[in-house]
Image 1 (tube, helix red, strand yellow):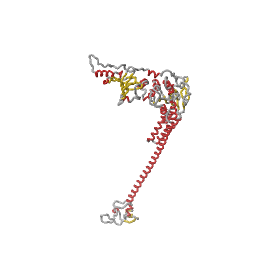
Image 2 (cartoon, each protein chain N blue to C red):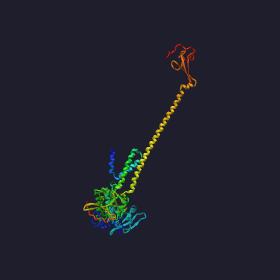
Image 3 (cartoon, helix red, strand yellow):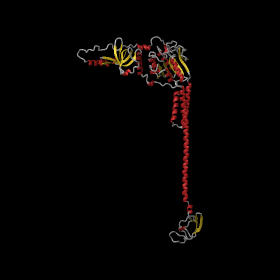
Image 4 (tube, each protein chain N blue to C red):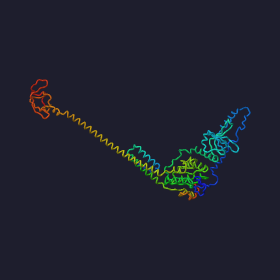
Length: 96
Length: 452
């Protein structure tokens, strides 16, 4: 149970690539065979979770096109105009 | 008439957004300092010009003296790894690929040769009148009475000084271990935010943007607008890197530093030592894409990854979403398939066991049955009834119920019961004959005492 808990916790911090590589490892383990049915079931469950997480990660990224701007030493983000940045305001030098 | 190179507008438009405004006036400082390195051609006049043997206590053979000169010149460290600039004249190339020419300035001339191995590495065509910066060693050719410069490295002059500065910085940083592979960080597989440090105008940001969104339609891009050439550009790029690193929220997961192609002078900002150190110090992995595929800058060497072009950088940084999805779904499917396979396998195994169990029990039962049958036969064969059937009989003393084996034990008049195959007969003893004895009447009493 505690291992389960740890895994649950680990999952939250897992990066996309960690999750993906874990998923691939699980598939490989299953493919190689030698896994008991019970363990295979566990692998399947975990793999399914990882797959969901990975797909969710792909969706979580929000399309945005922004530009950093420094005004009076304050950092701001403004939408970046696709069409060539004509609207870009002038920037002051900053020391951040 | 300006679209001759990518990102080339950066120095022309004052309205350009730039994160850190520098006064673009004056000379390019990096260029200047490198150019200020004012080297003149090597030694003034060739030694031993008049070639007369000295008169004095020691009289040399010509070859002896030449040997001495050769030794002097060729072991002098100051003459063994020298950079010289000058103009090419009397250029010729031998059939074997060696190159011969002279390098001259207004006051002197020196014979030069480039052996074939080095000549094959020279990337541009040499010709008379060309200004060169060369690195070589002074050698003496006794048969010709000449000293020569044997050339190890050739660069076109002008940018030659820049090359020199570039090489020196590269060597220095390399010696510090700044380019070590062990320092290179892996780029994240899926960056939630891609930072881009480049000019907000021009083709580069558009290329990056196009590739990024083509590969990953919901990508997120954060641009730090900077000037990418001219005075102060290096400082702006540096500040942009630091700024991105300092963001407390929504920090980029990776930074692309990009610039389109250009001359060495155009790319010079990316050969700045401070910039190199800022790149190395960045906590966020950095991928550089400066100039064309053949252009290398110091920034390329210190970055975690170098991309040949800005578009390539975007490709390297952002996964193709469709492909990535397919990869995940493929794995998920394999997972299902494998599990189903495992189930089937288990079921098959169970079935198999059951079948074997049944078979085993059947075998055991059959064996037992056979044994039983065999035993029954044996039993049958031994049954007394079988014996009676063949005409034998059994005689039993009626008094004791025991079978009679020895007539001696019988008494006259005693009742006997004789068992036959199909019934029995009651009779009484009339006379007794023991085998091998005379017949005699039965005794009045039993020999062994009667039993009751």
